[in-house]
Image (tube, rainbow, N blue to C red; front, side, top):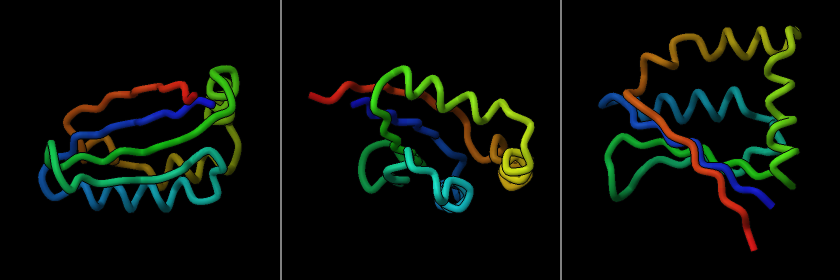
Length: 97
């Protein structure tokens, strides 16, 4: 199994807004496990945790986001302006044992 952490370091006051946006937009996404905000460590951090059966499954999940479907258009509309809410981000991919 593969666990993916997408981490965003938000501008002050935007972490909870971004977390709520992700939660709304990703509702019904089977790969999504959790959306977390910091309690300790680096401030203004949002981590989106997803799980996949394999790296192939992870790569295939990106294909649906490339499609020009009505669902993707709605998702893009709901995510409008999210890039303005954070400074930087990173992705970590883990294999579970």
